[in-house]
Image (tube, rainbow, N blue to C red):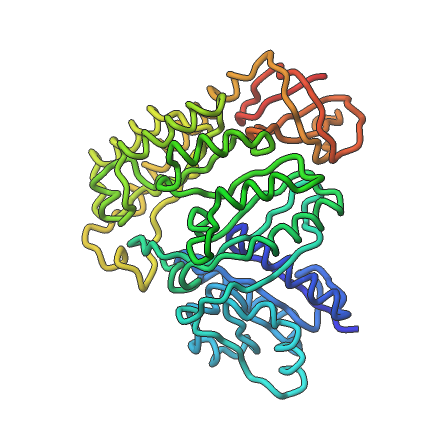
Length: 433
């Protein structure tokens, strides 16, 4: 029996694909082992979102070959797609499997092992086919991520993903529902719909959009919670929000991508909305949902970002009061317009700006958590942990606040009601029954 080890780099979509590839290998008779063990085959699902991600991808590929020089090392995913033929001359890499060929992994691998194939790479920018990968279980035991969309048509000036993932492609609704029914049958209580550009779901399907998909998923028996991955502001219209607010299983947790709170910076980023439009979207979500958790992403140190522009972003974040802000220092990515822009920001300035926003983020997380003190919270129990000699069960509310519950002693993967007693230093809720 051949031994295979997989390693994922990158986003939730990559993680979903990595688990799907693992299950394909298991079904083909491979023994799955830890990436730190000696294996016959190593598969690295690579990321290319930044130059640093490229470097980490190369490092993992070389580390695998060093661990077992006789092994077959497979470079899959976004870096493999973006780098293309440049990887073929790398002695540490035996097989290159681009995006939209992962479903063929077992066949491609067997052909390579039999000496009938050297490499596999599809020109992703010329395909309209959605690659159908499926899961029956995930690494988490209560929550399952379900990929429903791939590709992006936006071409933000800092982003290489449209070149690595191709144009928008949506998964057929029937296939999504079949997978979710299978996951529900295997005990999962919560699903998270995810994609590279989730808001564009259905753009290439007749009569379908994210709203219609949500309505169908909502009717799936056994699923008690539905979450959405990252949304673009454009999808948040009054009609959309009003309709989805009528779906009681949909969690009031919305990740609305921002990137900058300054209109001048947004224009350079090619983000296609203004701060005023974004402000209106947040107001709509708060109009139809009670205390929704609004989270976002922000890039600091984008080329040309002045101190005044950064201050506008800081003020905007303070005004909107997100539950959580994911802060990234701008990283140059070859092949993007932003990489060629003048006035690149020094690393020290990026670090200082990032630190300011991280402090603000901690302040806002605690402020949001304090709104729930004394209230009854529905918590999906996920795991048991031991802290300072005492056991706790932890889980998340519908808003995705983490709750630590002492002395509960119940089985995980069930929803319980607890009262919020305190806000912890890291911004999560501590609950007691």
